[in-house]
Amino acid sequence: MSTPAAPEAGTITMFSTTWCGYCRRLKGQLDSAGIGYTEVNIEEHPDAATLVEQANGGNQTVPTILFPDGTIAPDARWVRDNIRTETLPIMGRVTCHRLMLTQLRGALQDVVDAGLASSLTTYDGCYVPRFIERNPENSISLHTWGIAIDMDAASNYRGIRGTMNPEVVKIFKRWGFRWGGDWRYTDPMHFELAALLDAPKG
View 1 (spheres, helix red, strand yellow):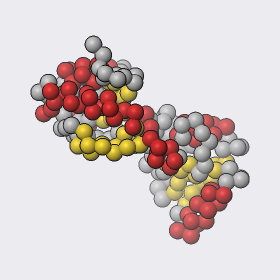
View 2 (spheres, one colour):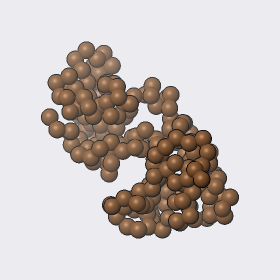
View 3 (cartoon, one colour):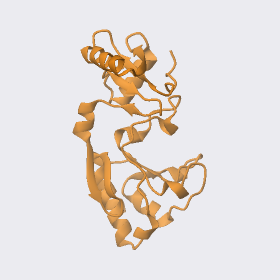
View 4 (cartoon, helix red, strand yellow):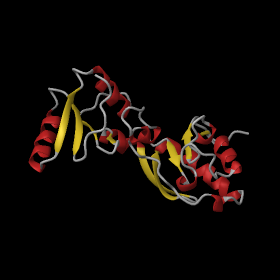
């Protein structure tokens, strides 16, 4: 079985096993609500099991849900243990992985200290569990684990040079981030955590 395509509008894909009581309960709730779904038993489809592991930190947690818009629902316990919402410089309230927040805060504060705060205007997401470009044929995005952030998306969309200030990029790289503007198919809004640091490099 190949990785399933996005469900049709009004339906979801539920990854399950035959022994999963939570899956049976969810199916009953979906049936009662009249919501269409396709059930995929991960014990019978190794590719589906791999997808579930990718979405849940290496665990085969079921039920895992794939929505029609290309988003996914990771394990609620993992989300509770790792995803945090805090108020940061410039961006205000952001929701990211707890391990990234210290470095993100440091980078944004350095942007402020460098007098560059006005060059960043919008926060466009960090923890957004989904496939890259919301397409299940692609890999699961690092946004699923809250270790990537998008900023100023309107002027920094994929495939263009964008307007991201080069000094802002340098600051984020010093704080252990990788910049999507360096990629062959550019994504200049995007910064992702590449290394865990206690202090900025250099």
